[in-house]
Image (tube, rainbow, N blue to C red; front, side, top):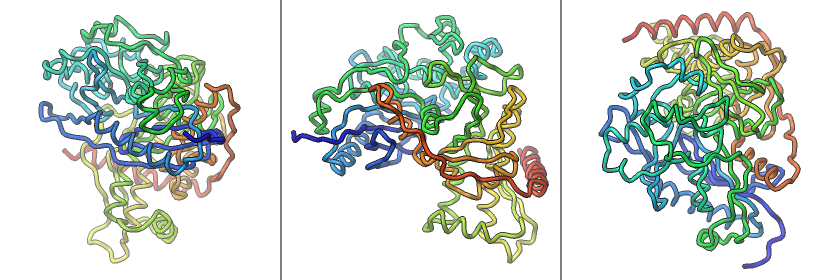
Length: 483
């Protein structure tokens, strides 16, 4: 193997929609990045369940890792880490073989939510209102309907922890990921035997906990040979994609951060365990062990935009969309597309667009996209207001990251609704990948490079925005009446 002088990190990021593999320098510069869609299959044994095959996911990761390493063949990889969607898990047998992967939008456990008799007590311990979204009920669903598979399972892990296991042979569960299981006491920062008993899940299923940034070991010789990576490359514990993305923009205590991706968490950085008496928010461990994140989540937002872009703008890039949005003077169309509001007990199951009839000749595809982005912005704002009812927010700015805020129109909408500056850093587009590199820096005792402010959007025309916000509320209420 030839000598390589420049060093970098290999970062694996598994989101809801796609998996990415990147070679990243210590300063956050991405030298090469590849992505592929995650392949899901419907599980017919349940009314609402999907799964993925971990062996296929691993093949994708290895294939893309080879590609990015070939494009940067003069680089020495000194560390490898992973980040992944929250609530997604992979079940393993005694030999360490992955048996099934269940994503964050797998709801196979919904029929057994009744096992949680005191949901308020569970909220107090786990920081989130318990539903089939979370990992414990996915495991219960396997046990109750797939006994042949359940009998083989000896442990499970988050997807990112499993990726690191595949690289290192060492299995451990990182704390921000453990926060999503309903089996982890958030305030105490440890697994809970009492929570396991509620679901009748054996405590020995739970791997040891590990802090983000912990060195799990060195790369397995066979993987090092397959990828032509030096055998002294270290495997570093990463964390959940939301927390890792937040790390890339270096927020301060009490900052509010919008993470605009497939879903849109609205998060405040806090240094003590804080929960909502009305049980509307989530509290999780941050990858910094001294901090928690308090969250209200707008649900599926970016995914709506992506899917509808494929309908209205299948062959155009986002600059074309922004230009057409800038040309809109009258707002003829509003939308409600199923985003979540923290103070609503149930999600909308019907959605769509509302515009005047008959259809005006002035109505364009840009009007529909304007309506999508306005729906996203208003949903984020609603969740922010709920967050502020739990804990005050005094700063006159809000930080934002994730692919969704590449839209200048969305940033303008948010600034006007919040009446605050919206700040994005130069790390915002690939925030979870760059955050992974920053984790590696800290693990290797290297300095991190503070991100630079890329853009500040200032508020204007707030009264007009509030009037449009009222119109959006009316539209959402209309769809709430639709059965």
